[in-house]
Length: 274
Image (tube, rainbow, N blue to C red):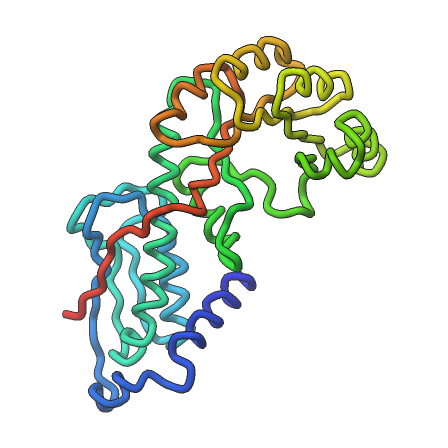
C-alpha cells in the first residue's frame, strides 16, 4: 500500500498541481454528490480498491462502494461502484481514478483472454518486466486478477540469464556456473536459449528453467522432448492470441507474454454524477 499510495499521490499532484481551476470556479461551496462508475464494454474488473484509494486521498469522508469484486466479469452498462461525498473531491479524483482503473481492467481482461485460449493444456500464462515505469505493482496485480501468473518482479528476485549476460560471461555454461556459485540454494536459474544446441548446453550445465526464445513450433516440440521434464520450459517471443494455443500444445510449461502489460487496451469506463 505504501508504494500504491506514492503512485496515487504523484498522479494527483501531476493532475491537480496548484488546484483544479474548473471545479473551483463552477462548483461553489460544499455540495454533496453521488456518482456511478459504469462499464461501457464487457471486461474483467480489476483495481476498484485502487480507485477508491484515489478518492480517499483527496477526502477521507468520501464513501466508495464497490459493487463487484476484482476478477468478476462486468457486462456493458454494469455499475461497478457508487461514490458519495463532496462534489469537488469526486471531480478532482475522477481522471486519476479512471486512468488507473481503466488500465488495470484492460490488463486483467487481456490476460484472461490468453488464459482462456490455453485452457486444457499444461501451459501457464505469465507476465514480464515490460511494464509501465512506476506502475509495475498494480500492473502485475492485474495480471493475477486476470488469471495469469507473475514472472519475477524485478532484477532482484529471480535469476534470468539472457543473451547479453551469456555474451558478457563467455557462454552458457560459464554463465550458469557463475550464477550457481553466487545465489542461495533457494533460487532457481533460468536461461534464455535461441537454438536447440543451446538447449542441450543449458541442460548439461544444470539450468532449472529453459526459455525458448522466438523458436518455431517444431523447435519447441523438439526442445520439450529433449528436456523431458528435467527442467521447466518457457516459451517467449512473438506470442499473440492467434498463436498462443499452438505454442501451448507443444508441451511447454510457461508462456511469457510481454503484451499483457506493454500493450493492453484501456477499458471504457465512465463516471457519471447523479
